[in-house]
Structure formats: structure tokens, C-alpha cells
Length: 431
Image (cartoon, rainbow, N blue to C red; front, side, top):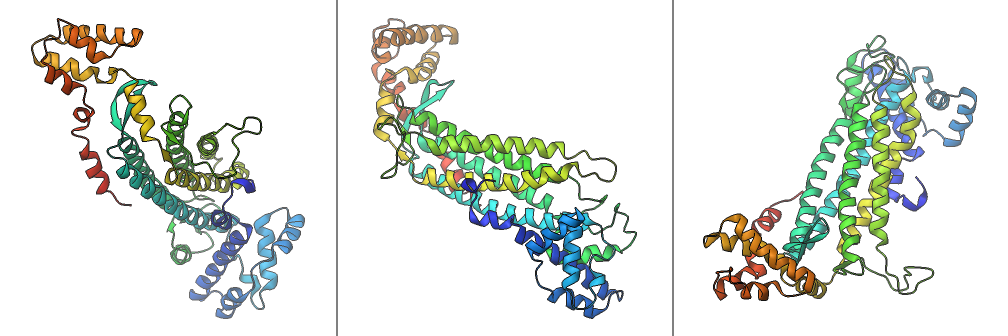
């Protein structure tokens, strides 16, 4: 991932330094397990543990000769062990090290993403509760629908983030596995107890039945979960982009001192963070497709997945990490224009209250079709001529509602009288 979209913590997880550190830890734990079994001398295990971290430059120079990154790593590591270097990689195949270490790295990445998701939830929840009574127009199909509150809109986001967090926790558990089972997963050259020791010390589970690799449905689940979280962020971003439109102006991204919205038009104030997040979501969906393509490999393994994973796993984690942090900041600093919300509500000429009138007419004895026809006829006049729906209905002889009953239909509180249940649920939800 390019530096522009890479934050330090996630960059560190996927760095070559961290990868080589974990590779060394896997190799070291295997030698320790062999020593516990009385196969390798304890001095060899201690020497491997004491060996310096593999130098990246030396590793790459060796890889230029071997054309195999893990084999080059083994050569360099073994060469720095003071005693018993021959026990490095004893009984292993490359994927024992690579896939087990990758399970650790994905777990570390997932843990960071879980933290980011929880932070986003807290910010959205707080903003939802702050605006639980901020009345605005609800829109369906981009058209005025009925009154709602900005807090209710945000509450749907908060619960979605909570679901995303739960999905990510499940995916984190799915990818936190390793395997130390040999070239085709048969434990031909080392007992399962070595695998149990290594994975236990690393804090990951054992792949129940491995081939030469851990199976890529796990990775596909992780990537698909990240894509789904990205889709949630895109939903939030799309809504903010619509609300910031000049004709709407109900919610706006913060605009910093000295910030420029356009190089050409000084008046511009664009929803750039939301648009950027939308783009990030597109990337995440692409990475998920690549992960799904990696599930089907030849026999016990081929390496068609390897080149893909070197790109999509770190990049997907970096993209989602960046997008989560950006969305959290965006919502925390979101400017909510409550005056404009009321102006836009008033500009509907009362059309958004039509269903309340429909139901009131049914309650006093009209058939549903008849009541619908009466309200729709007046609503179309309000649409076309700019009249207030309330006033048109007052003059309609077929509207047999008294003044108080009709006025009640045009009160936003009528539409929101049961909405507190949502905020009760939200207040009870913690991550």
C-alpha cells in the first residue's frame, strides 16, 4: 500500500521486520520442541533463541541466490547460530513457517482493526445519543418520506458497526491458526506434539487438517469481512455526501483553517473524506474477490495464492485501518446543521405527514383506498402548486377530521413517539 494510506501501527504489523521476527520465533519454537522431545540438544535450542534477528539485507542477498525467500531465511538464520544451526528447519516445510507466521500476523492485524472498529462505534453511538431528538426529513428513493431524527439515522450506523465488530472477531478467530505438519500435512517427519507446542506458544489454534498449507477459506473469510466493513463505511460516507450537497446542507465534514476545497473555485467545500472512504471500500471488495479466487488450489498446494496474498493481505488491512480512522475522525467532527434540517422539513409543505392523515381517515371510517385517494389528491396539488398540505386538507369536504385531529397529524412528535426504544437498545450496547 502506498504511504499516503498507511498508518504506522498497521504498517508495523506487515513490515518485513515483523515477518522475519515471527519466522524466527516459529523456527526457534520448533527446535525447542525437538529439544523437549530429546531429539535436538538443548544447547541448540538455546543457541537458536539467542541468535540475532535475521538481517533484511543479508536475507535479500541470499534470496537472490536461492530464488526462495524462506530457504534464504533458513540459510541466514542457521549461519548465525553459534551451535547446532543444523537443527534450524528440521522436519519442516516452508509453509509450516510461512503460514503459521502469517496466522500470527493476521491475528495482530485483526486485533488492531477490532480496536479501530470499537473506537468508531463509541463515536457514532455518542453522536447518535446527542442527536436523538434532532428532527429531520427521512428520505426514501432520494424523495421526502417522513420525519425522523438524525440520532435515529446514526443509531442504525452504530448497530451496524457493532455487527461488523462481531463479524471481525469471528474472522479473527478463523485466521488465527497455524500448522507444523510437514510437506503434505501427514506429520511424516515430526509428531503433532511439536505443532501443538508451537501454536500454543504463539497463541493460535492448530489447523485441524492441513495439507501443505492452512486452508484459504479462512483468508477469504477475513478479506470478505473487511470488505463488508468497508461496505458499511461506504454506506455512512454516501449518506454524508448526500447530506452535504449544496441543496441539502444538513451535515458537513469539518473544514480546517487553511483548507482548500478546489484549486480553481474558492467557494468549494467538498466531502473529500467521505469520497475517499468510498474509494477505499471499492479496493476492499476487490481484495475480497482475490481472496475467494485463492481458495481453490491444486491438490495439496500450489503457489498461485502466494503472490496474491503478498499484496492483498497487507493492503486490505492497511486500507481498512486507514478508512476506519478517517471515518471515526469524520463523524467525531461532523458539523450538524439543525437549522437547515428544520428549514428543509418546512420546505416539504407538510407532504411528509401524509401517512398520518391517511391513517386518521381510516380510523374515522373511510376505506383505505378512499382515504389514500383523498390524501394523494391533495398531496399532488401541494407538490405541483406549492400549497401547504394541511391547508388543502382543511378545505377538502371529504376530510372529516376535526381541527385538533388534523393538526395532530402534522406534528413530528407523532411520528417519533415510539423511537426511544432504539436509544434504549443503543445505550445498553457495549463493545
